[in-house]
Each structure stands twice: as C-alpha cells, then as structure tokens.
Image (cartoon, rainbow, N blue to C red; front, top):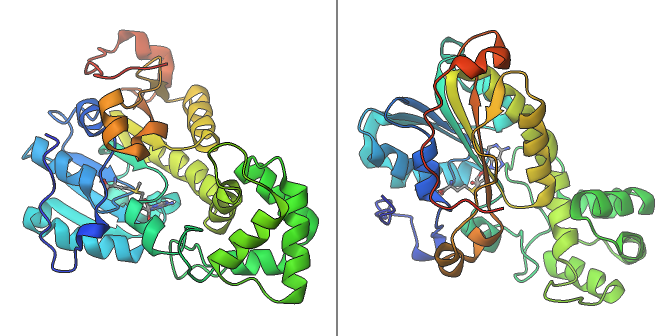
Length: 324
Ligand SMILES: C[S@@+](CC[C@H](N)C(=O)[O-])C[C@H]1O[C@@H](n2cnc3c(N)ncnc32)[C@H](O)[C@@H]1O
C-alpha cells in the first residue's frame, strides 16, 4: 500500500503529480475483502483507485470525473488495470444515470475525494498566483464561467456569494470593488481579479486576500455544494445493503454538509464517532492533507433502515489516525 503510482501515460508530466490523501484509512475503511464493486466518484489522477485496485485483485472500479482532462490522464495512467477499471465523464450529482440501473443497490463502496487535484489548481486557472482566463469550470461543457459572474452579478449578489461560499467577512467591500472595476473594463483574468480584491481587502494573517473569494467563485461556478448534496443522495440509493460511503472534504462548508447528511439519513449510520484526519507525518509530507477530513458511513444491511442496525455485525477496520 502507499506505493507511488507509476507514470505509465505518455502525457503524464511530473508536475501533474497529485498525492492522494489518507490512502491507508481509505483502503482500510472500504472493507475491500468483501467489496468487489467500487465507485470512485472523483477519479482525479487515479491515486486512490490504483491503491484500491492493488489492495484486492477481485475489486472492480468505475471512476467518474467531471473534468475530461483528468479522466484522460487517469485512463492513461491506470491502463495496466485493463477492464477492472472503467471510466465515465460526468458530475457525481448524476450518479443515478452514470451508474447502470442494473447496478443500483449493488455498489459495495463509494469514494468522494472532493475539491481539486494539485495539478488542476496550478494548471487550470484556479489560482491567483498564475495568470489565466477567469474561467473556473471543471467541465468545459458547463456554460457559466467565473468571468460571467464577476462581470454580470449585482453588488448585492456578489457580496452574498462571497460571504456564503467563501465565508469572507469583507464581502461587501470586495463586491463593491469588483463591480466598480468591471464597469471600467470587464474582469477576465485571474490576476486582474486578484488585484481588484487586494485593493479592497488587505492581507490578514497567512491567507492571501483573494483566497476566500476565489474559493467562493469556484464553488459557485461548479455548483459544488448543490452537486455534493445531490451526489450524496444518489450514493445512498445506489449503495448495496452494508455498503460504505467515504467522503473526504477540504473545507468546513463541505464537511458540514456531509456530516449533516449522514446524521439525518434514514439508511446510513456513521462508522466512526470522530472525523478521520491525517497524521502529522502525512501533513508534513503533503500540505493538502492538513485540511482533509474523512467521514465514513455504512448503509443499513436490510431495507428497514437503521431500526434494525443493532442486530448487524459491525466489522469496522481499525482507523490508524483518529483525531478530533
Ligand atoms: C481531489 S481530486 C481527486 C484525486 C484522486 N482521488 C486521486 O487520488 O488522484 C478531485 C477530483 O474530483 C473531480 N470533481 C470535483 N467535483 C466533481 C463532481 N461533482 N463530479 C465528478 N468529479 C468531480 C475533480 O475534477 C478532481 O479531478
């Protein structure tokens, strides 16, 4: 486990690396000895999927990604697994149509590793550190870009969006600066937007003044919270009785939504009392892991839901790194 993934694809450049987080915990909690059919709903570069496929030769994976570029790289990278891996392009919100109907209620495990891969952040214009068109779409087939939002939304709409999705307390000031600036000339690059934000909000602590606003716009452009809500509901439906749902989130808005969904679900029960976080070693090696939170839920093993859960055997794998 945890062996580095061989770069088999010809187009895989070293700077397109992405180190998957919490791999050991993910593989342990998927209960792969019993699970033979896994949906990796956020395939990315296939780091988790490779470890899952290596962990048990019986396992088959369907890998989904909203970004066709990621899907292409992962398919090349994981080609050696042959028919054990199939890929599908799409938003996991549409799991009910992406996964064949015949498999509904038969999926043993579903993994969602939310957010973006490191290479997407660097290469696809999601960062204020590199100059790129102000786009932010994970799927180029989606219509609305970040530039559409900043140039067309009203000051009030923008302020609400920055506050709601970025938890940005200076949202009103930043929204005013954006709208004033867009009147002079459309804001269509990442660095122009970063400069406008910087003119209205100074650095506080370690965070760049544009960090929260960029996060908010990315969430809005990709409807990330709406997709997550629909994806969780669909995952609950397609899981087999006793099947497991694993979700790794990277910010509090996502984590709150996942926690609330599991806590109020009629058929899922949480497997761990505490959220699983990376060890100090992993966080030092891979800074992305610092904010990662893994929640694991299991579907009731009969159709009557949780009422009968007391009678089922709970064979949880021992988590290696439980934190508060
Ligand atoms: C953190 S990366 C996953 C990394 C992957 N686990 C690995 O080990 O390489 C998240 C991936 O999910 C994809 N993604 C984000 N939201 C999605 C959604 N709603 N539906 C499908 N894929 C999504 C992104 O394009 C990205 O490739």
